[in-house]
Length: 100
Image (cartoon, rainbow, N blue to C red):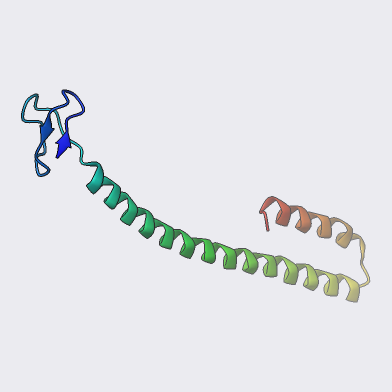
């Protein structure tokens, strides 16, 4: 039996509205079951997104690392060191702001 929130009358489980006042009835049992199913689906989906996000952050960190390694090799080969003094902290700050 579903109890009306407005007038307190007991109604049949299949009723959509109260037989006394016409107020829309809300079944807590069906709603909680639907929320549980929705939550399980969203949790599975969220875990998948979280895992993809983790891999994308690692990929981005590798790109930054390889770029910095290439710059170190290039500037060291050409014996020009001053760009590395600015490039290294810039990439470190970029990675920090991107929360890698």
